[in-house]
Image 1: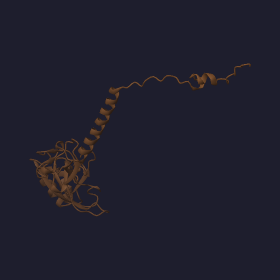
Image 2: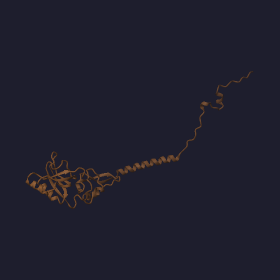
Image 3: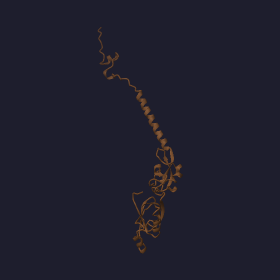
Image 4: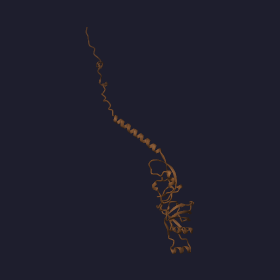
Length: 234
């Protein structure tokens, strides 16, 4: 009786012995390196950013009352109560005048020309005024067409000039030389009366030196005064 060996199928005998083929082999994976310091730093930065955003929102939400200018006030002019208004602003460290001092503001003078919409600061006001202080006088002028420019507003600086009318009186006054041609070189306009849109007729008040105030008033009563605006002299 012949005993013959049965050949094993290709590759299966090795598999049965626990050996794996090349197709099922896996490369070793190195263990992941952990960096706790970087993770902690990332968490710290996130917390700092969140805290900063929260503080900014809270700071913006803090509103305080401040003084805002609502009408033009000329340099040297006393600040009237009608020229200021209470406004709520964010407390961001701006050097503003608090509304609680509004009554004190109306007792001060504008150190510079104050324009509407300006937030008032301490540097904009002064306790005294050279423009309307001692040695000055306020004179009212009733002007006609051609004697004042259109668009004149309170706070403007003008020249007050002598404009002689016709007649013997004007000729005699002009030859004697008593009234000067330019009565005031930098008169501050403190008030402008109502005037319609098509004419420059109106009443204005100006600050002049007290020495020429009587002459200006006398000539203004006879209609021999005109004013010239000086741009850039506010």
